[in-house]
Length: 234
Length: 234
DNA sequence: ATCTTTATTATGTCCATACATAATAAGTCA
DNA sequence: TGACTTATTATGTATGGACATAATAAAGAT
Image 1 (tube, helix red, strand yellow):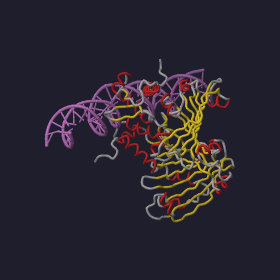
Image 2 (image 1 turned 180 degrees about the horizontal axis):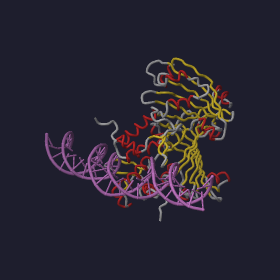
Image 3 (image 1 turned 180 degrees about the vertical axis):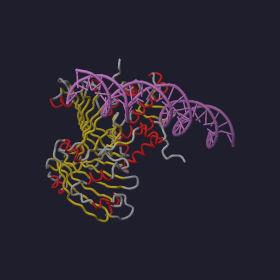
Image 4 (image 1 turned 135 degrees about the vertical axis):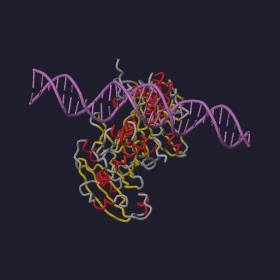
């Protein structure tokens, strides 16, 4: 009989998960240590270690040296969500993507912008506002600040054809980011741009992006709540 | 000299990430295979394997047998967000948590509820509506359906003291879930319950929870947009 | 030319073994 | 009693070697 899951660390992982679900190993309690488990499963300790490590990464068990491995009592749900690049998101829905630049201004950072971009002293920043359409329907309104201190190359980019998002992905790849999700009512201007009514609910994503040393860009992404949803599975 | 990061798979992982960021290994290109890398790093292949595996899990590289490992060209942002248990969320902000049950009704599933809970045939369901307060300010309005076919025990639970969320975490732990986030305008009733104005933006979380075979519960969580935000780092 | 079979290759996993490390418990001494 | 040192323990990581597996390329047959 071939096992359903080929790899044995996987079968061990799901078996342990089952035992926790069935309360054989209760919440808050310590489970047998790696050596004991490897004996009972008839495998190497490394294999058990990998299973337990992945369960710990999933937030299901907690591990501490010398103490052991214990079942987390009330684990918070860990949702793993993907924030796609707008164009890909729209095209994956079978819609035609279009991009419009609304504003591109270079100016000295105002007080609040300087704080947002964590600039120690006043410096030039780039303010870009733009719209992303799906089949000629406004899909996302983007309001972005880029630190020209961190990305001097951006000074020479018009953003006529390429959206700042895609330009940054190309030119400053794989940065760390922090996201804040919220809901807010559309202002008159936002409503006009997104072709909805003032006060309509907007899904807002605020993103701050940085490299090792500096904040690169902060952006607010506004989605009409009715047309937008963000999904996370398992 | 002691390395900054003790484990060598970690240093290798960050080194590879650096090389990708510096475009030494360009987007879409294949990077050296594990054997070559292990030689150049002077370590075992398994160590390189772990570094690359974790980079693949993070969505930074793609791996295929025989083909090799290549840098993902335009990686979608993978945000790892934590959806806390309401009470803990509120208490961690230093506020006092209070819970109020609004409705608890057992009824045969209507058409739409039957579909939502993926019930093949009509069966009894439990409808629970409740409010979560932070310092006597409404924080979350919860509208939940529980399949009594999947969780017969829920029939005997009053939910007077314990919120359905916490009861389910205790009684049906570690279920798989799917989340959908969106924004919508508050209805008159929602506004009344949350002590906001009708039309105010609400942050909505829809969650479907299932065990191996059956859908256990579906729930809609409504947050006043102004007071709520969900954060995800890195 | 097209289909099928057979290498080849890079990743995926496993093992036994070894040493490192963090956290705790036990022991020692003032 | 209290401060300090020394085991002890479970997890964390590394190694060389081995075999499995998926995907592709090459070779062969029709």
